[in-house]
Length: 180
Ligand SMILES: [Zn+2]
Image (cartoon, rainbow, N blue to C red; front, top):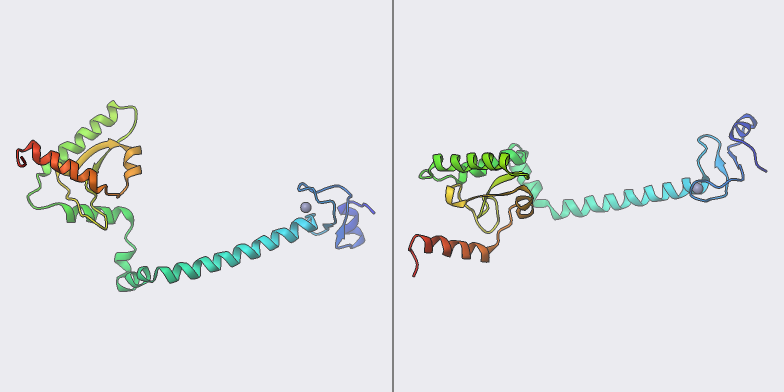
């Protein structure tokens, strides 16, 4: 028997059926309270249960895997909560040796700003040997700075290509007549 939702409400029925399919193609009853398809509602709550379950599982494995993060946090919450920019600023401070020529470094950044205006795509200053990396710690000196496009820089991130770095280093040494 097909009736409208309003009629079902007036009659005090919990469910009603219009005889028309829902947008997912279920020809079945609908709830009077919200007009939702019964099958859809059942599927929805099932999905929610599954999501909750997988979310809980994820959290359990995550906190299990990342005990070291928790430990680091407990050791020094303030330090841990530093945002990326602060960490980066600190990394730069740490990686700048006292003998670094700050004027040349500044000129590299100035050149980048100039290129930024001249080029069609944004340019960034990056470190050939990254400052924040597990294997290496590059220095914040002019020789380690490169001006690259932002896309390339984002692809590179803090990754370190050992082979390429070796080739570059040999080239650098050769330029200065330090190798045979
Ligand atoms: Zn449905």
